[in-house]
Length: 76
Image (cartoon, rainbow, N blue to C red; front, side):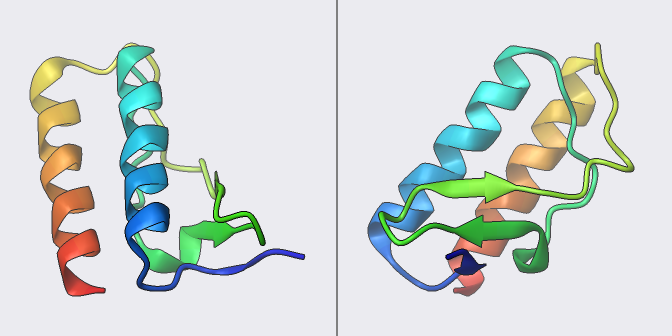
């Protein structure tokens, strides 16, 4: 069963890792919100809602999203 994101160091690390993997592939998610991150019982995460995503995104856009992810994780 999947649940919404919850404050947990392992979850935070997995969220950061998921976005790092996207950005390595130059994919911009475009909608960084807790509602778009689901957590499995083993604390792995699933990113959802890629409607605003952009492939072959430039570094500036990806860096902006990194800051959004950091802000989200800091607010948990």
